[in-house]
Amino acid sequence: MNFYGLLIGAATFLCIGAFHPLVIKAEYYLGVSCWWIFLLCGISSVVLSLIVTSTIPSIILGVIGFSCFWSILELFKQCERVAKGWFPANPNRKQNKK
Image 1 (tube, rainbow, N blue to C red):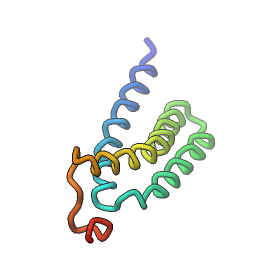
Image 2 (image 1 turned 180 degrees about the horizontal axis):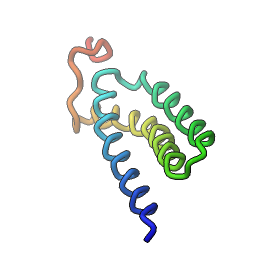
Image 3 (image 1 turned 90 degrees about the horizontal axis):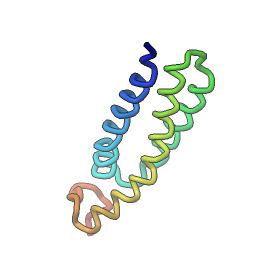
Image 4 (image 1 turned 45 degrees about the vertical axis):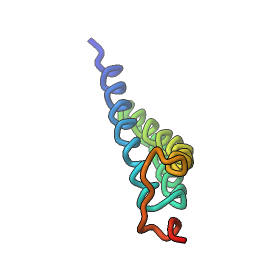
């Protein structure tokens, strides 16, 4: 039996599950100005996925990299969700003070 598909599926599920609250927390504490962190992590993960010779770690690094790229878009969408009142804004962040 080949469990690679199950392993990759579970890793992808866990990655998506981890990035969802990560984006929410990043927007809350840092705002959208932290998008470049996701970009650097995504580029690093994708480059590492090209370098790693083992199949499963390479695929998982690719999934993490593209999850980072997708998180950049979600970070800006999260900002819109906060503006609509769907999520709380951080009152202590300088961007929110008037």
